[in-house]
Length: 156
Image (cartoon, rainbow, N blue to C red; front, side, top):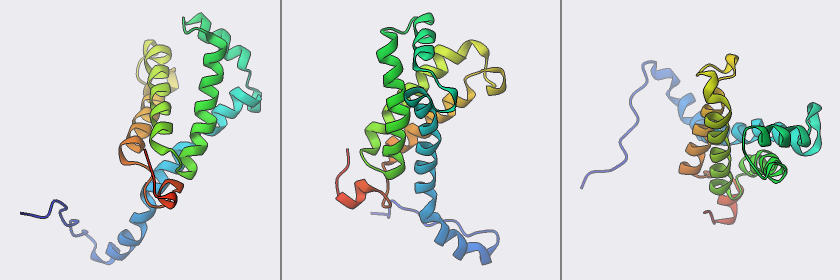
């Protein structure tokens, strides 16, 4: 039976092999942590009024587009972004937090932004769909070795 893990291809510049080997262990935590960190200010904006945020304004918008009950949903959105983002940063309950974020971003992409086309600078779905795909990747892969999930030895 053959080894299911194939060896890494040789780099075009052999002198970079050591750098790639040493940096590769930080790549996945970087994806997971940045995904969480970038979500957290959006949740803080909604939940705590940071950066001019307003939960009532979000609830009004959600009601306007037909997402009800609007105020509980607004709080759920803020909680997923802030607390789910924090869970991703530390790598705890990573898969459920990532799936919640993915669902949230897919709703944003297809319920809020789809009518504006693809490009984010025109209000399109590009940006929330990208974050949804990153969250799905985190959910599929899990937290990885540099996480609280790994530290406690349990994961979803």
